[in-house]
Image (cartoon, rainbow, N blue to C red; front, side):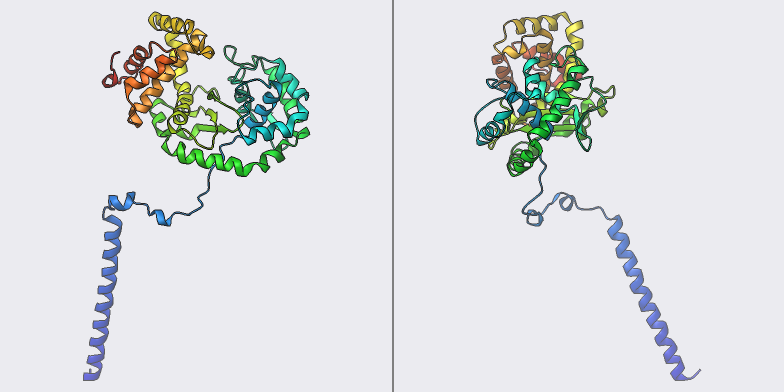
Length: 361
């Protein structure tokens, strides 16, 4: 081998060694990146500057509910929940649909027992099937004998047909779409002021699936919140709805409380029903409170029992998730006629195994 060939061979060997070293270094770096624990600071850090200025928002104004509420609004002009006259939107409703006060759907709504929750119960049990509204398969909640305004499925089916006629005759779909900017504004305010503070995951410990919790805010209604759900033997598969009033300025605590309270009903009602039938002391508290209640909507003893446990569970949510004071919340509930709320709260804490939360009276 000549000296020239020897030098060439050595150069090739050196190049091979350098290339191998580089490849080995790359492999080591890749391995380190994949096995080295990530920084918790990096995990939790979000650069606000990187977030889009106009973030998309969810529309919380349920078209079904607004449609049914409108029919009830026209059917009972003096009803303080269905027919408030507080905003330009309410005046727009009255001016746009005043000629339909004698529509068959409105006449039908006038003839039934229009409990406050009747429109919401009906609305969540219908869906758009592509060309009209139809009842969902499971209507057990809708025709609940104790608290439903519908009582039986036949009146619900009859009203559904009239509702579909009303939807077409009034061009309600166009009205709803024309007000989308307002609805999105309400929704954005609700998300900012209430929804971002709501801990849906808290309900998982009691068997509810946070992904099955639905919220409807309404610019049409006023006052009371409502709960409804699709009956299901498997609590985790139960779809639960909460309805509350929409507003330009949401009061954070009260709106937050309404959302929690309505979802809590799905957990608390079965507990309350069982205690009401089996526990004499609880039965006595519910009966006595219902008889002397300053709130007329809770004069039925069993409904008062359900409210007691629901309010106790709502108090627990705010203890777990906020700095609300327990005794202050007890005082607020007593002013609403729930005089034994501290005792019921103790019962619930013992039932849940939360002995550390028991505060006595």
